[in-house]
Length: 98
Picture 1: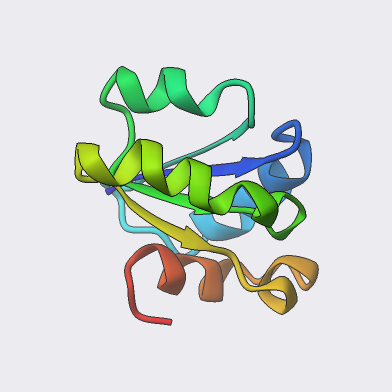
Picture 2: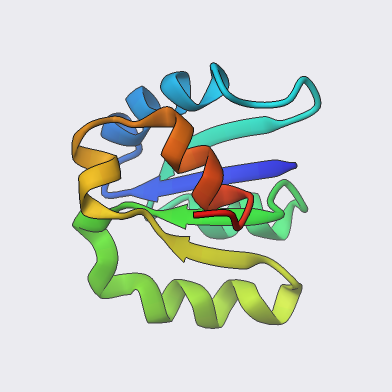
């Protein structure tokens, strides 16, 4: 699964990416970017699931409107999951099991 995390600048979600990799399958690809770069990743076909960080949840609808017509599932990362940097729960969100 190709998973993209989006936050303001991609820095804080990079920490969560590392935690998620501990619970990822071998074929999973996980990356973090800032708001200014997510469209490039989507347009390049590098995303199947996009997770939105809680600090940019006000842009969730805009991101969903861009991604969902392309067949990309968009989910908001729960604030507690994000704050605790819970990689296991974040992977569950990405896989639709949270």
